[in-house]
Image (tube, rainbow, N blue to C red; front, side, top):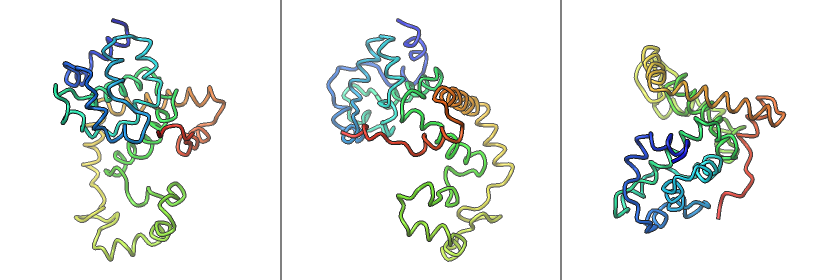
Length: 230
């Protein structure tokens, strides 16, 4: 076994997710992501089982491990109850740990997820809020969404929500003590350390590409080379 496989094997998700693969391909047949993306969970499991560090390294640098939606359809149909989705989770974590995620377009998008969903959880207590879904960043939502973003207060008042308000209600302000507790959870579980890891690796990649932080982030947020779908 090599260094990368040893690290992968130490992840409990690999231990739980890969027990006795018989290479039947049921996971690929049932996988929603495999229907659209150039993605084959059976092939990924085969590479992991090979324990070949060179092949595993290529996986960690690739777009492929970021196609999985972690829906776990695979484990519901596998005759041996393997869970390729858990194997993917372990691969993603190792890719971040080793800094390999910045070598693929989909991997680099971890920075955008960290700065939007991740930071929003710590800042607001929500993964996303209407104010974070700006029209400028999400033009695919159309002109109706543009109008809605310009009239949020009126819309949510009519719907009976409590947008950014104190007390109970949908989209209310989360109390400071609850946000502090979330912050401690992220600290203790290693979430904040992982955030720092993503920032550092992304900063190195930006410098390597001769980009400022702002330019790199814009590329990460908007780039799509069109090669991901079948």
